[in-house]
Amino acid sequence: MKKIKFLFMIGILTALGLTNSIKAQDWPNLAQFQEANAALKAPTANDDRVVFMGNSITIGWINSRPEFFEGKPWINRGISGQTTPQMLVRFRQDVIDLKPKVVVLLAGTNDIAGNTGPSTLEMIMDNVKGMAEMAHANGIKVVLSSTLPAYDYPWKPGLEPAPKIIALNKMIKAYCEVTGHVYLDYFSAMVDDRGGLPKKYAADEVHPTKAGYAVMEPLVEAAIAQALIKQ
Image (cartoon, rainbow, N blue to C red; front, side, top):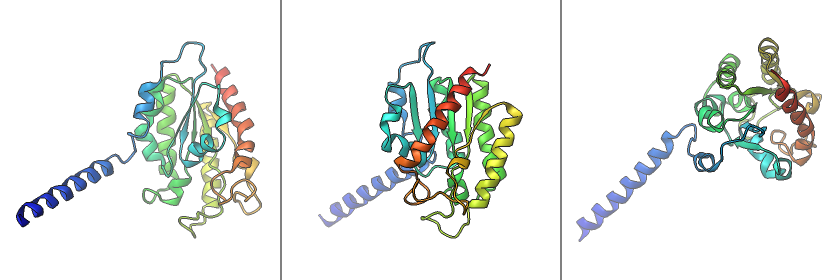
């Protein structure tokens, strides 16, 4: 009887270990939106479908301000904590296969925070360029957002991200000037004198509140409109 119980426990532990292993292998979290993507109907020619690709700042938008997305052919595909290499892996599934006219990419801060390991600004830009090139090759207009200001990261303090974000945004803007992609400048409208995001826009100085999203909304609307008229 003891032997049977022992073998039963070993079986449970093995199954749990296998389940955790399978979950751990989905590094880009492709499973997150698979069902939602499958449920989407193909857009009609008149649909100005837009996909918002990003991290917690993107998904937090639809959680904090769902009314901004209501009634619009806009799809939110943000995943909390994600870095640009993870987004690059899921870009085909969560953007290209949805056949939008425009993609709005907001990314980079989690790379600077080192969420998936050390990353240089050049590495971040390589991933941003990879996504932009994939979109362009599939006839999708590209809006590249500036990374939002951050003076410090509550989950990983002491990294001094502000100057890195400023440098990254210069690189993103320069890339847009060369390629003709739309550069969406949230940074200039939200930054404080420390190079950070003030509490009036983000309680933790990283993730926007409703007041922060209210600043971002007319800017992204204008950027999408600009992208849609580009030939």
